[in-house]
Length: 338
Image (cartoon, rainbow, N blue to C red):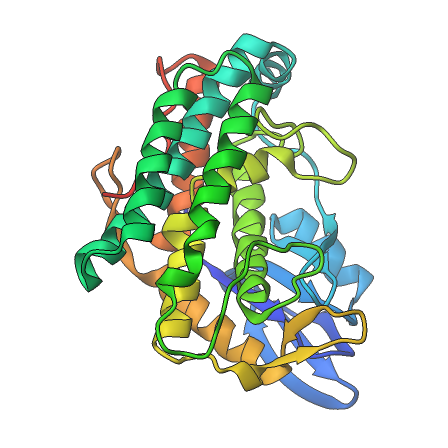
């Protein structure tokens, strides 16, 4: 199993990263902000105005350290990648599967089913913990119906349509999961997020997508060729496919915990002239510290029946997906929470 290495999240604007012997140094002007042994770093995520020396870029590519660039709001821009590793036969099989509707939908409907089932678990857990709620119970019933329908989806487009209906039902009651914190959620808004809850959700989804892309590359799969999401230049479609399994169970629950435990406040956000809402720099730091702590929490993987840190779940699922595409297993077991 892959070791859970640290991820460096660089959010300080006008930072500069370079390599100094076997360490990664972060500076802002003449001030040194941090220095980390390169062997302990698995990924570097740069948000906003962050510069990286060409030598460090080359080193990251050579050593397999993920290096990605995002806007300050978390929109993906670019990724530095070294030479392709992994079995070329696996990637060729992946491309053939992606071009075949029957193969694609066999995986796509499992990923969508996992997303719907995990979202339903979040809603039912809320009912168990806080008592009967007709809105949540009705939404959970709608998700159960969607779950039955998706198993019979014949095309990827049909699976996507069912996923969209389920997402509307789920996010239609998401406000019921927020408790006395002053936060309100009126619906999912993505580009850009226009309220604090959407800003937190988008940020969490961005971080998990990066983890999924790294995990897929680690097992030799191409993160840009998916089964559920269509190919698009610059879009890590397979990583977005894998993200679906973790949205409710990892990202949404993490965001709800931050809000309901009042670890974030409304004054931790700023609104730009464009209407986009984002975390302040200090709030982003607190968010990422809590995120790293959450990644270290161990759970029992429902299929592997082993204790693994949450941060390694994308690597577990990427491994299981690669096994299935190679023909080692009859079915792909998506990640389901209990």
